Length: 289
Image 1 (cartoon, helix red, strand yellow):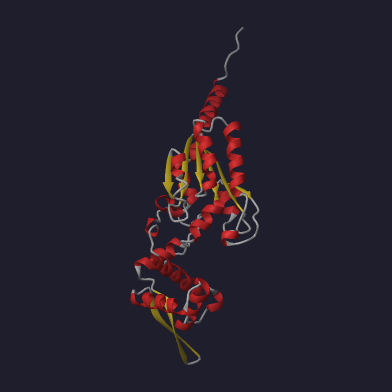
Image 2: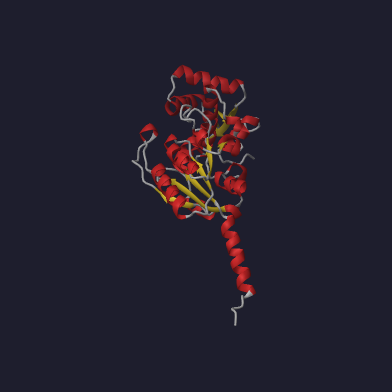
């Protein structure tokens, strides 16, 4: 007598095979690279608002039903990103230790580990047809090329700013290249002049000064502000004075006074009614009341 198929089991197996075939996208994020790229614009890749959040935008763009895996690589001891928050978004985090240095001297193996895992996925999970790489590191070019020549669809996400090597032409090694300025809805920051960037830095600096609990009940005087410009932004006294004057003239700053023990102290605050100030503070992850 022939073996009869159980309709319940057949239905379950059919759905499982369909689900597996749909999940054909693997996303690899060089979070170390992305974090420091966005940090120049005072932005967190795990932004509190969904339309600026890298991980939620990727899930929205590709569809949760098609994503097999999202892998993020960084030295999480050196960056201000919550591993738990990423894990709640179904992101697999990979702790890759660096050398503990800052700036240009900062080195780690995040990109190497990412490349190794992507190649392992290529050969061990043949059902993955789409590889998504999030990084502006030109060291990714051999990986992009290898994935592409094997017939996989390769998408690249990175910030199209001065940190992206023009000579590397990374977009030539993938099927589709996405600019994170557009993708994360922050394209207003893409072509800032040098002085506009300094204004941006200064607005966040002054706003965060007042948020510091140690400064509660204090006013931020012009001398203190300019001294902090010199110290934190590595500029001279003349440049600090020019920056402060420009911010007053263009109404990024407004006068502020506070009375303590019958004495009045004068200072300055950022102008929360200024539309550009509102946008800068919002992108930095703060709620503008």
